[in-house]
Image 1 (cartoon, helix red, strand yellow):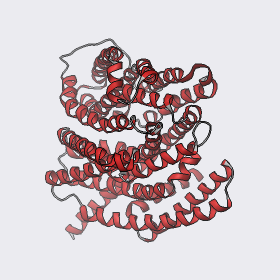
Image 2 (cartoon, helix red, strand yellow; image 1 turned 180 degrees about the vertical axis):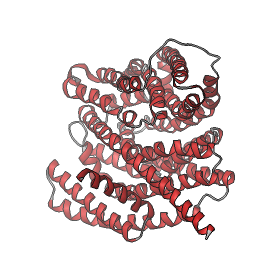
Image 3 (cartoon, one colour; image 1 turned 60 degrees about the vertical axis):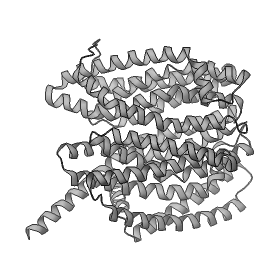
Length: 533
């Protein structure tokens, strides 16, 4: 009887964790959804205004260069600040937490300012490395754009500190919504000012847009008691703690970003428009990851850290297992659906203005190959969070270095026969391999990690996704035959096809009794009942 009670209690705790994760993830998804919708509208306007040509290629290279270091800093601060701020508040109180936050914020701003100066001076060398195929006016344009945009890293650093402060206080909505004002700035420029100020103006808009991610978080921070003070103490023990953990995270994030840089550099020597095709395809691919996977990992990271802090390894495994199964529930059908609908999806999203049918064809090819690694990219992100929760930043770093090596090898193997599609496929192979290696390392560290339940869930959702894929293909063949000839008809055809796919997949998950699907369904129904009441 005692054993039964313990098992029931354990099961109840597991369900509680799953429901809590689902609820938090869905809240974050709501905020991210509108932000990502605006982001796609921004990309559509950029595609319509600049197409997939010389100016667009120069702009995307400059943006990648400007945000490369910022992405590493963002990863460091998001990973380290939440547990550190929580620790300070618990041990020393809220006021001490704010004082240490100001010190970290000031150090970050000064460091980013120094890097901006270095980046401005070194822009010609940066562009030469990142786009070895650029020559003449395109090279000079990329250098100019890079110099305009490099201060973006200052805003990324500031926004990351504020995000860490808000999330350590359990506030996830505002950080998730930071993309909304940023994209509004982009859209406003593209609609009203693009013809007058050209591609240089777009980079200025990028700079202004990124700084709005700081401004939108300030009111919520002040409501929580934050007040800015000038404080600079390089001997701050918590600053040192951030720096100790930062090294491997910076290296790990940087080598992951190298995948993108290597792809763009090699693509600069291919057909004009290859860089833009990879960029637009990557935007579609990463939208799903950013919208769903980031929501899941953001929701479970504090719980992972708490469980490991209590040395509750079974709790860590439980949280991780639910996270993986939720990712599989979403990412497997997303992979199948996007591969089947790659061409009509890109056509609807981007083919207008200067973005021609050739651009659609190139982007669809890249998208199909990127989607091969969609599940791998997602699992890798979650497993990295597990290691970070265990204060292990070294293992993900080593894994990232290995992944870049694999990416480089397959880049050179595949670029010949598949051109820019080979670069996308090489990235996917790298992501899948990285996820497998992290899982192996985690099993060595924790022992059994619930692989049986994960495999069962994977088989169920894979069967449902494949059946969905068949129905999606057949439905689109029928609807596109009748609904063809205008943008509205194409959207209607795609919408009907996607709706049929959703219904088929959801029905199969329901009858196959996929556990995480039922948890999400119950959570959604609870929100609906609450709204009606």
